[in-house]
Image (tube, rainbow, N blue to C red):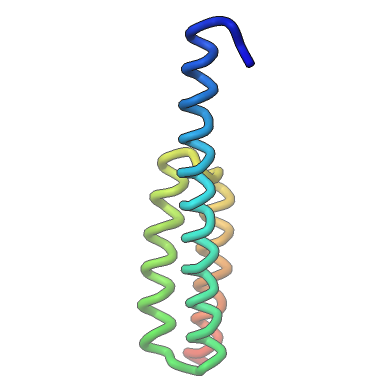
Amino acid sequence: MANIKSQKKRIKTAEKARIRNRAVRSELKTAVKGVRKAVEAGDVEAAQKAAVKASSLLDKAASKGIIHKNQAANRKSGVQKLVNTLNK
């Protein structure tokens, strides 16, 4: 354990951020999984709604620095490609 007061505070805030970031990443995975399930079921309407929600969550996570903006873009692209397979 650190002896310096500012370092003790950094340890506490880093732990809070770690827990918050883990929760957001988990939420992202759940959103993408929802898109996959809708696509597997063949439900175009539900897949589109789930893709919009997932895209929004990915953008939000990227803007807060939880994931890299390019990773968010790649995941959004993958999600949309999945949805587009239903439209054909």
